[in-house]
Length: 370
Image (cartoon, rainbow, N blue to C red):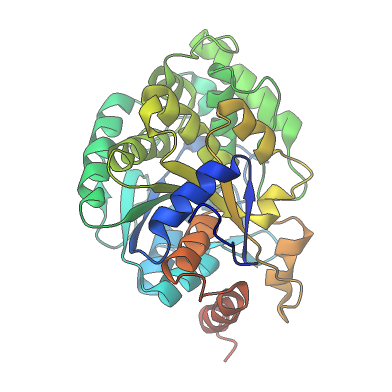
């Protein structure tokens, strides 16, 4: 089945042979979705994150995303998580994919200051400190080990596992970890805004690396130390889940440049998972002119392909959703990975049109448009 025909809803970047091998093994099979929520004080630095209407509200975004996925409404805050300008969380697409596929899903608490009001799988982490502190995650090793155990547990009940995140400010911590590991030497990470604050992120990260006494590439072989110094608590949890699950079943790493740092850490900690993981993301991220998922992944490994969903909101009657086509949001809450997974699990029966129709249904409901 390595010659399998991809549906038009999906595209591949990178190693097509590896991608199609993995796809052929999980096509039409049953998956499980996880979203790891976490906070980092980095998101409250003015201008760093648009994953909330104000810097302070970014602390509520992960919990609110989780509540929206599970409960269909938010409890920890009024309204839904939005970007400035009223653009809705990508959890709307994630929820659409999960509802259409009927895929089981779990919320993992990597380390939240504001916890979702629902049952979570606890990793033993706490809210991350500012990346500028140089000591951002207090117990990265413990969180990682718990992640490995969870990944192993999930792999016993499913044919594949989807790993994702909601952690505002996470592209900044991702940049810091990618620099500390020497994966990148420039800012290639994305932003939920078309006006990517590249210089601010680089200045902030440089301050964090200096505080930790780290130069670019100094921690190439010690990703957990890189995360402890300048990462966030989502990272060790998800690196562990990926490694634990990929020992037995294929893993779709759902997310954008934020999850690239997690992939870099995971493949360095356990290279044997290469050939059993791929990144699942969106066309919006792959086409982002202000970041380069492709360059980052090429630097991590030529054996970890990207499978992305060709979602298009340009025909949507809602301006908040059309904004995705203008460079807003692009990825998050595993919207790309869950969409890719829903198409895989349905053997291609679920299409981008189906996903868009369901997004409209969910959006109308949560915005009280009906």
